[in-house]
Length: 258
Image (cartoon, rainbow, N blue to C red; front, side, top):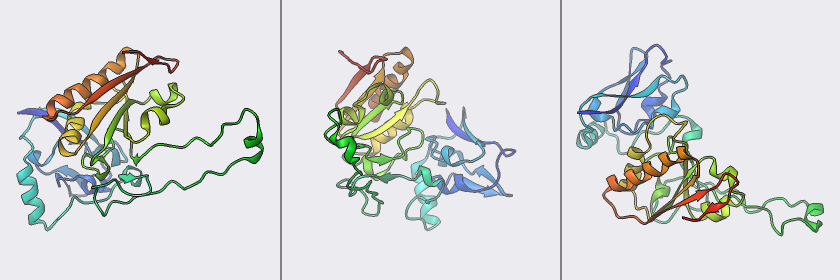
């Protein structure tokens, strides 16, 4: 079958091994000081290895390849004595919840990181007649946020209300955190700038997790239609009936009527 699969440029590979550690399926190994794709059927084509490569040696190609074989992956992991996907890679790509505690039903071992209970207040500014009554609060619930970086099976997806937003949207709409991000798990991307299609990865996120709803926030510009279409395709391919809606922002941040 012809499908999307990773390819590794040996000339660019520096042998750091971060991609092998980040691959959840054990599809990448080290040979002769270089990373190699061990078997086509171990690679799910979702690209969790891409963001950890420091030299840009890994990319996607579309070619004839064996279909991803989940049973073979599980058998190989069991043979190697691995009970969970290997951990490692770039610390900035590590999945984590940012709330005071992990989401209900999530992995007990997931690391929750509180952002701090209070924000220092400038007394002079507080007494100003034009000062806001309270400091703005971040509503970001997890890390990472980029669609390309987020792990498919991150524990914070369990029971989540998913926000999938164009990365320009938060700059356009002043109240983006309160109106859209609050009580949601947020994923962002730009179909014009990012390589590849989001649909496959989003479909796996929807398929493998208990997602309660999906909200898409896009800009009015035509290129943002790619984000909306990717979500539609992912919802169809997930095999689930999940409530979803689309919010469109004007370039000045105004929320446009459907």
